[in-house]
Image 1 (tube, rainbow, N blue to C red):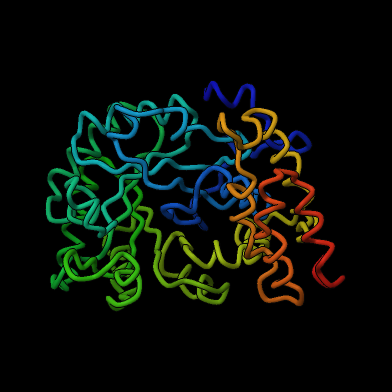
Image 2 (cartoon, rainbow, N blue to C red):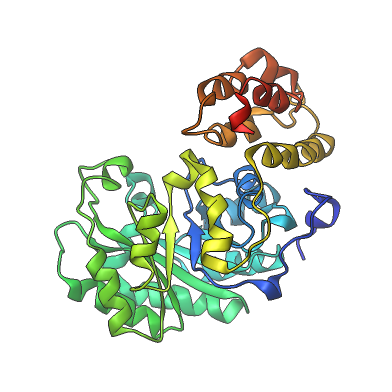
Length: 353
């Protein structure tokens, strides 16, 4: 049990989705550095009850030599939620996976897809795809350490390696170590010469590689990721794979997720309006302010740490710009009053609510 969760009931008016009720990774939201922190996930959980949520990548060094609570604290309302780890030392990954399980995460995910040079210097991320045996050792060590699922997120190739055989052999080797779920970002990772942003846009998408993996390994859970932006995109992929992971669209246009529960999980619980989502976030923000205090000389919670993740809530409807402007008012943010959300909503046209 996460010790912090005992004292941090983030959404007192709602019950969490129990771990026994998890219904698979049919839809998930990708781990995104600097974005999918615990405040972002708390917000996303108000929009979809069932989609799987992933942390930002947390390195083994950060957990073994840093502030564990700062990296692993989360609200019980976030379930189902997975901890993504970055590392390449089996023993270190096993220790960190054990910490993740102790804190209450539902899954441990190993990052074998990040192409950034900083990550490569740590000898992990996408460059690990060249060492499938090492990845298998890492997976086995983590599986031996925990009882929850251990999964791998990876690319379809690295640099100029464009043969399907490469990713097929990678998956086959890692699967033999006991990994049953592979999240496939259907692009190559270019390790030199492209920025992380360019690596998300320039290498061509090869969805057929992910589809073929499912055909070749029908016993595995294959989740597809990369360039997926609409419900129609999701619908087109699901006949070929077990699940779809959506990335930046979920962040920039989060209300897209309001359709997920009914459409993909047969949960016809009434969909919250945007105004209801804002109302539901108020007790969360207040609970965080009560726990950490307002930002000041001694530290505390910056209101912007939560509201920055909500800027896209009104995307595509009249008044969205006014909403964003209200939530970006530096003076009001500095005051730390969560009523700023209500002021932002009031500036919207009635249609927005």
